[in-house]
Length: 315
Ligand code: CP
Image 1: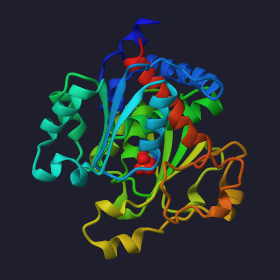
Image 2 (image 1 turned 90 degrees about the vertical axis):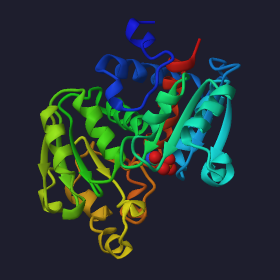
Image 3 (image 1 turned 60 degrees about the vertical axis):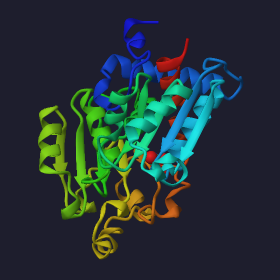
Image 4 (image 1 turned 135 degrees about the horizontal axis):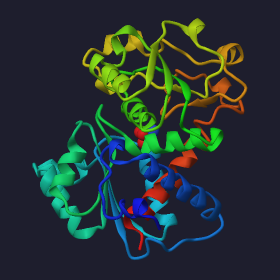
């Protein structure tokens, strides 16, 4: 095992910024191995380890794929979904105290929380590794890893990648983490398409440009180039709106349908979405071989999380 790999052992993962190019590529290499081995063989890499999942926001994929990852590695889980109603948080326990308690029973904590910055607060409170499974509009580093792995697996590189990001670019933590992740590699060009009020913030735009990503804002489907490596659709994030009428107005601003794929997607363009979708991708697109959101992209989440847990916790 290289020094770079060893650098993950016992560490938190709060932001994709905690990783560099070599570490990301070694996570992918380990994920490749997981993908080959795990369907055939039960592993005992996490035998005797307990991983706690604390999800203060709903989740289908991140929760289930992390649970599956721990179990497929031979470990066990403590699972709290909705701790605001089911744990002593309901009695007023602070997040720091909750984390300090869960730390007594487990070897790592995977946390999702509606407030940006909470994963970092937890990391300060705990001595065991904390993995950010999404903190409000902040970051979702393991989602970025699985998205990048899906692109890397197809094109064998993350340099000079050209992509399209569509939807709620202001509030989408998966967008923020994926842009950060791509900026660790060289010369990406990303086309951005969103309702005006949901554009990437000026601060984020300036930051990602400074990091070397060429950002090109477009206004409609006609401006999408035909040679992109990926399209990354996202939903408008209802839970981040105080005005629900505004959400209703914007939620279906950009719909991905078969007609658009036929007109604008390249032969190899990956059609991606972190999910859940709420109408912005028509189900008629699902059977297109380029559509990976319900299949490869989601499944890669489990293998990437297996790789990460092995590297952070494995013997
Ligand atoms: N992609 C993602 O984070 O999905 P969940 O909210 O279902 O975990």
